Amino acid sequence: MSDSEANDSRESGDPPAPHADAAPQSLTELFLAFNRLALQGFGGVLAVAQRELVERKRWLSREEFVEMLALSQILPGPNVVNLALMFGDRFFGLRGAFAAVAGMLVVPLLIVLLLAAAYAEFARVPAVSGALRGMGAVAAGLVIATAIKLMGSLGTNRLGLPLATTLAVLTFVTIAWLHWPLVWVLAGLGSLAIALAWMRWR
Amino acid sequence: MSSGLASPISGVDLLGLFAHFLMLSLLAIGGAITTAPDMHRYVVGEHHWLTDAQFSASVAIAQAAPGPNVLFVAVIGWNVAGPLGALATMTGTLVPSTALTLAAARWGARRRETRGIRAFTTGLTPLTIGLLVATGWLLAQPYVIDGAHRLGAIAVVAVTVLVMLRTRLSPMWLVGLGAACGIFGWV
Image 1 (cartoon, rainbow over the protein chains, first blue to last red):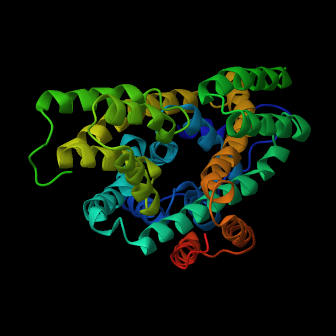
Image 2: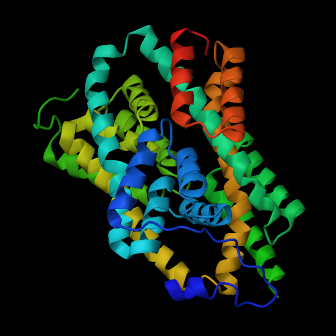
Image 3: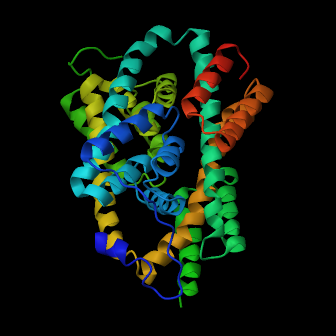
């Protein structure tokens, strides 16, 4: 895989996507990094994954993160698990993929099952349901903030800012307001977007 | 609903549960949560293994706990059939999508610089960002649009966004703050 990395700027006239300047050194470091980010991820891991992988560790540039996220969203399965698989595979192959996913899942799985077992005891306490609501609102804010941070990558998109923004807005409207099934949106709008991008590379 | 290692549903039912989640795995485009309506139909509507409230609580517990949201699948399995149920639903959900993701990622990585793959990622990244905003919007809706304490909820969401954009504070502090606001009944 490293040869494709090295040849990134080969295509003439095309500025290479900015690359990250660091990499995980071992499977253990990979496992611990994903364990750490999963344990910080209340109400979803994506916001923390962006902060840890892009801003703190600098293992991915913003553009690389968005690219990997786009792939993990279009593929079936949990997005952040797909992201962990691709990230681990990129640095250490299959072992890396499993180390990253194990780091992300094992400890949180034990915690959530303990909570599930205890939940029946606490379900009727108003403070518990109140806390769950408050955490839910924060989780929504975290996802929105991550989206705003990644919007910067629309400007460097080869489609150009106006077209890329239009596609993003149409996706939001069809999913959030019109409640169209995601499969339709990806098949329709996604194919159109890929076709437009294809034409830009003539 | 569950206790010990003995499964409250039969082996055949357990296998059916596994098979159903196996099938849903490959349909879960956009994340496991997109197949939650069909899990609900199967587990609550068709088999009556869980009540409506138990299903919603399963999702809420996983949201509140640290870790990926997909763990709600394990909680559903646990509530249906204990540890074996959790094993059935989690492996069913993860194995097919994992195999496909690894195969696709490797295929794509080898062709990273080809026109087709570049068009693919360039075209889809704007959709990814639109999808993220939509996810945030849908997550906020129960509190911001339909909730009993709309202003408080809007404030919590807004503060979260601002702090995340302007500071390097860990999201954990915000989650703690949100929990406190909820306990005081402001959300």
